[in-house]
Length: 135
Image 1 (cartoon, rainbow, N blue to C red):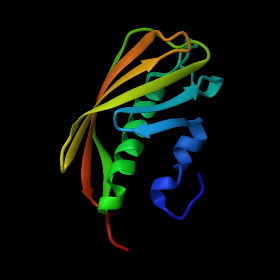
Image 2 (tube, rainbow, N blue to C red):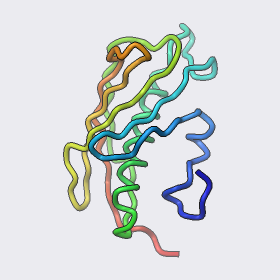
Image 3 (tube, helix red, strand yellow):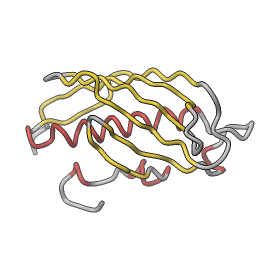
């Protein structure tokens, strides 16, 4: 994803944790992370922060992709994640739908599933949409 356009450039953080971008459509945005030892909490489960990271990265990138040509950026405003079952191997895939697309705020609903399509977490992510800084 290397590019001079910041919307096409993967963040160093997402590269570090191994985020795989599947699609960025506001009707069906998807990304996933493969579980590896560095992403486990002490009991061997995927760390809750990884779920939250995946949700925020996906919603941020998908919102930014949708508003960039209007001269706007997207930044996280709030996140709420409820955990249902652990991911212990394979991948966690976030599937997000933008439920509200306002001028200054977007609200996303996100499901995080394991490789067997089981629901592992539900999230709501609110994004602030602001004018892109100049310079």
